[in-house]
Image (cartoon, rainbow, N blue to C red; front, side):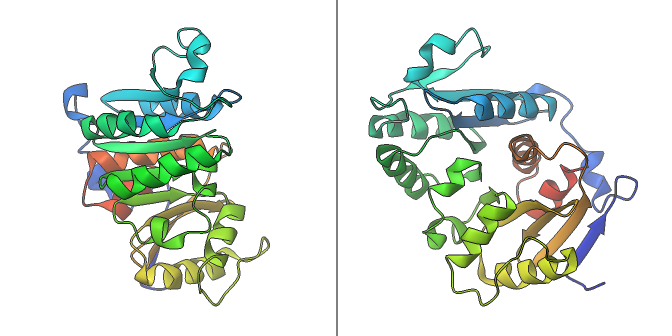
Amino acid sequence: MTDYWLKQTSDKPLFPELLWSRPENKQTAGKLLIIGGNQHGFVSPGAAFRAAEAGGIGQIRLLLPDSLRPYVGKHFDGGELAPSTPSGSFAKAALAMFLDSADWADGVLLAGDLGHNSETAIVLEAFLNKYKGQLTLTGDAIDYFLASDSMLLRRPNSLLVPSFVQLQKLIASTNFTKALTSNMAVNILVDDLHQFTLDKEAAILTEHNGQLLTAYNSQVCTTKSNDNNDLTAISAKAAVWWLQNPGKTLAAISTSLL
């Protein structure tokens, strides 16, 4: 057991004070903006919306490309629509709505199902450059930035929730001297994440070998995962707890996993 490896279980939370100090009503439970979807996929933003509601968020805005207009009201209880490309992903003109909605929110979740579109890449990069608040990314939102570690890993107020494969690619894109392997032991991954996050601004949350690992500022917290390892739902709940506990990044994200 090292001083940077923190272990918690459902009956032994590391930060019990957070469990007992949750907001008592929606007015004080924070506001979350969820962005995601494209004409051919919208499962992730819908799953994030439901998980955020179950996680105790106060208010939610769901921002979708207007190519999904036929589905709003059928598959979503609500949703605001931003300009889309001819292929159905977010267009550059969507940036203004991204920023306006983010200004309303206490935190933003890029939930995925964004597709792979060069114009969407431009609006996402512009959004990351302009928006300075709490930002959580998961799913294919992370794919857009795998070759630009400075934008993700060196951005303050960022939480990345990658799959293990995405984490491998993210670390490989940097000058980190070690490569992650799919069969590596959890204690080795803990040590690697400790070293990797020594000089990084972002927090990282991932799953490996039955453990959820939260790494931030060179500390790593492990929590046994359950049978449902849906990273979209996990990221939404983490985003909720984080915006409700600003300034307590590691504690909030780790406690959200219980």
